[in-house]
Image 1 (tube, rainbow, N blue to C red):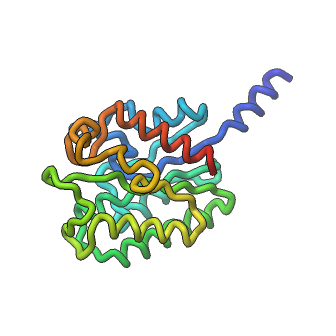
Image 2 (cartoon, rainbow, N blue to C red; image 1 turned 120 degrees about the vertical axis):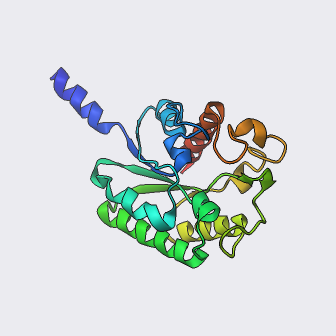
Length: 207
């Protein structure tokens, strides 16, 4: 009877699939670290968080492959934290990025209609020590335009969106990014990963 109860309790523990790029994987700008946000999130929320993050991943080129490797029926929640590399590395137009995001969201919800998805917009980024917010990079859009387009796409699916610009505008800013980011660019320190996990946990618990 005790074994049965233990097995039952084990099955009741929430499982989260963390989907994303290097900020999910735990890259600090130089190496992958175990003290990443999924690691801390599992401790804070007392649940299982499986890390599917891929360094350098983009929505346009990698998200479909990343989510195809997930057994979606095993999870109750999914965190999508991706998009910065579409701006940082690709020349694809914004419409092609959001179209691919829609395809991937549809795939996840078809694989598990009960899936609770939480969207985390990419963190403020600095390219060449310049805030990317209003800068055009390889494609014809600014970083803020990317964030707005991602947020609008998620909201069409009634997915809650953590927008750092609105909820935590001073979390990473022009005055502290050199301390928050291990590479002074886009990859957090272990301490910043912990702070990210705390804020994501708080956001999820409010939904």
